[in-house]
Length: 377
Image (cartoon, rainbow, N blue to C red; front, side, top):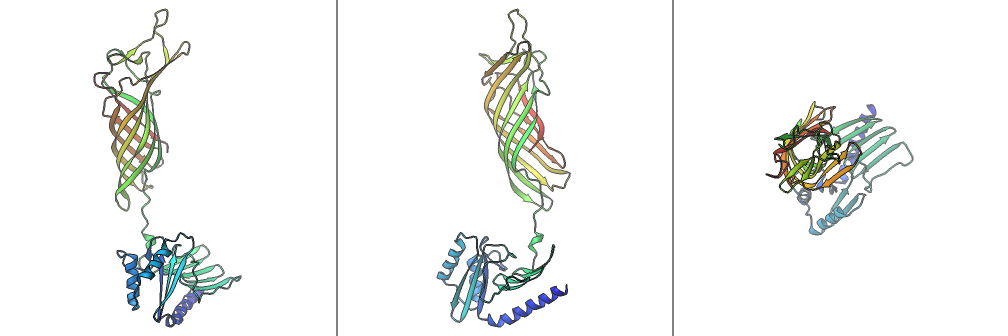
């Protein structure tokens, strides 16, 4: 602590001694990344307005040619920092253009800077402030405050408002690549031609691959309301628990059995109808802190366009495969509602229900698809 106090006193004396020498000098620093004047108090003004104000305080005028030189230096694609030094009348103007963050050592060196290379002690005065190093202890006086580090311990003294306290909350994000896996079901009136129409509950599976994005509509300290959207490809796999195969008849979809040469009904070990869709989900949702038990609640909907439809049946006795690709009078468009829930230490849950019928009107039974499951990504 004594070393720290001594260093601060040294810095104050250095600034006091150099103050007289720089009465007729103007030293400014520009953040190249954000194109802002470091230390500016008015965020609503442009960079040129801030520079003109700083020049006027010294009784100087920012010329168009000097402004163009500053703009050219800012636009230069360089990893290092740069500076512009000009003399206006009896005043010396030095403008540092820094690409590095505040607190990072600048490569710009003023004429009065010095460095004791090869030693543990180091004192440097430049446009980026004053840097003092003594062994493991370092003190850096910058435009926004004093940073003192002693090994892993860092002490900060901030001029004005501490920007480090304005961190955004760590909220759940629905953005990214999502893989949803679950089960399918059908609701509605079963076809009269198929007695005991049922699905295999574990064989009827749902899968979707989604690229999702979101827009924040409002945000607080612990929650945010966002609009989620994206694009996904999903698959319905309806596995029937009977031996009737879905076929495209002249007037609509038909469920028919296959008979053997002896006239007996052929038993199917697998009998399913699959449909793939290109889907656009629209999911308004509330996002909460990742430490909360409930991290996200979403209720929205989706619209889909059918990509393909096919049936696949395997005979139990001989393993013969029967596969047919046809639209089967399945609706080309689909829409419905969806709910999603994200829980801490548990996979995300989803539930979707089609509001549109599975088949075209008058071409098939009045049935609607639904799916539920978990999100793995």
